[in-house]
Image (cartoon, rainbow, N blue to C red; front, top):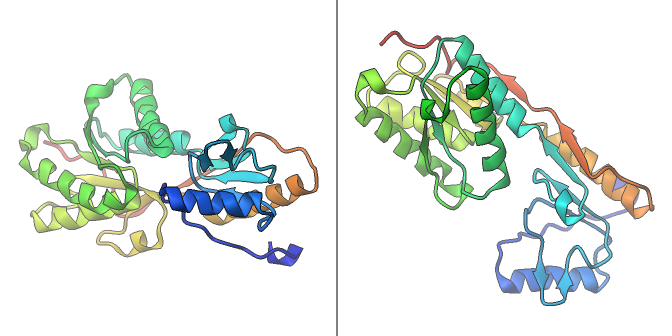
Length: 256
C-alpha cells in the first residue's frame, strides 16, 4: 500500500460503541480512502454503516461477501477435512475437537470440515467429542488445558486418540497440559492445530498444524482494495489454500 502512495492506519474493532463511532467518523469524514476488515460484523450505528460510506472495502479471513464486501479467505473447511483424513489414514476413529467461539465464521467452517471427513469415512458426529472454548479466541489456551484435563479423566479404553484444535493456541496448550498429566504426545494421543503459528515448530513434540497463507491473503486483499478504488470489478470471494504441515505431534492410533 505504501508503494501506491497510501499510509496504513490500524483500528481495533472491539465492538464498543465509542470505537465504532470513531471508525465511522473517519469513514464519513474523508480521512480514509478504503478499508480492509477482519471483522464478521462491520461497524454500523443508526443510519451510518461502513458498507454505506461509499469507501472501497475488502474483507480478510472472514467471508463478508453476503454484506456486499469482496472477501479473501482460506479453505478452512477443506483444509480441516484433509487433516482429519490424514488421521483417519493413520487408524484414528475417535476424536476430540477444541472449539472456537460459537457463531464464529471459522468455527462453522473448521468443525464443518471435521464432520465432512467423518461422514466420508462412514462415521457420524458421535466419533468426535467437542470441548467449548468460550466466547473469545483469546480463551484458546484455557480451552486446550481444559480439554487435556477432560481427556485425562476419561477411561483409557474410551478416550479419543486424536485432538483437533480449532487454533494452534488450543493445541499447544493441550500438549503442555497433557505432559503435566503424564500423557505422551503422540504415543497416547495425536494433536493437530490450526493457524500455522511459528511457535508450533518449537513445542515438544513439534505441532502438526494447518498453515494459513497469511501474507498471500494480505497481498491479495490489498491489490483488490486498490483495484476497487480504481473502479475495477472484483470477484465477491477469493479462496486461497492452506497447507497441512506434518510434524511430530501425530502418529498411528494407539492400540487400546
